[in-house]
Length: 371
Ligand code: NAD
Image (cartoon, rainbow, N blue to C red; front, top):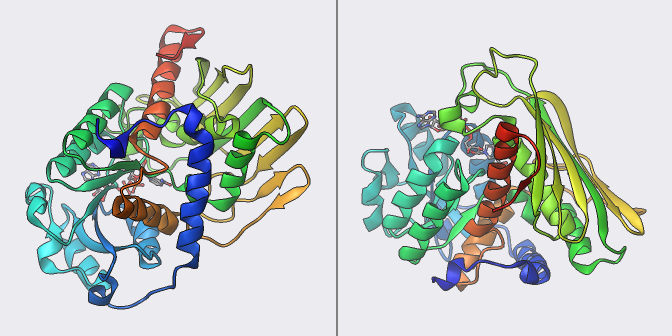
């Protein structure tokens, strides 16, 4: 097994939390650089984005401008017009621009160390595996795949080529969220009794890929429900053992193919349990954690900026930070130093197993154990 992708067990939860804090502190004291592409290259790893949609354009590209350990070295796009725009705006070399057909030739490009997969969910596995075969380290957006089985093929492909795989879980690099993880690891208020997490928004365009099961794998659950699963897992520091899920639908036309609103409950080994709701038809963005002797909350809990809340009376409001810049820097540091990412492929797999069980519960009803 490749040491870089080794599964982190729950026993390592405390280590992972503190390692992440260490990595994030290091990044925060490095000097800021904003120069031309050629200057930026020194000491930095080159990342190529594949899929130049909303998230890559509006969040990742501006964020990587603030990164200290990596820079935008290349792009992969199927849209000719985007090539000139991105080349000009980010100083990308002509020979570092690929399309979906010639993507595999990226293998011989020494400027590209990491491929960042920012495509619709159904394309994550194919392009992660192709990037691994090209010998590139990979960051893949959430949800890592459509099923846990597919996620495993991605981990296997990366292990086989001895490249690292990380999932785009930016919240693991957010200082306020990390405080919640730290409490789970150190238990100053005793065991977690209960977690409530809710993430939802009202989705627009009825023709978008997010509403097509073949491309998205599911609806709100796959897209933002995954944040509730993450929250329940990092707020408890435990892996769930069983789930019960319920689905609610108000619009059978728009949501004929995917889930609109899902609620579910997770059971954890310590006896803690969580209750979550995700929706494409209601706004929600919060996390509440009840400990034996106290409580914590975050609201908003998953936004790109402004995550804030409290642990007991202590206010969590470290601002502003760029989650995506820290996330990409964090992975670049892992690749450079050969230390495992704090959000490896296995972290994505843990969520995929829960999602699989939620869909099994929705299909067949009742309590489903995690396999
Ligand atoms: P988007 O629809 O805006 O962009 C998708 C991109 O894929 C587009 O550039 C599109 O041209 C390209 N593409 C290539 N082949 C395609 C095809 N067959 N059908 C449709 N598009 C195709 O989507 P997005 O919002 O940028 O999301 C992309 C990924 O990033 C998703 O997996 C999503 O879950 C993830 N995401 C993560 C976060 C986060 O906070 N971590 C936020 C938003 C999106």
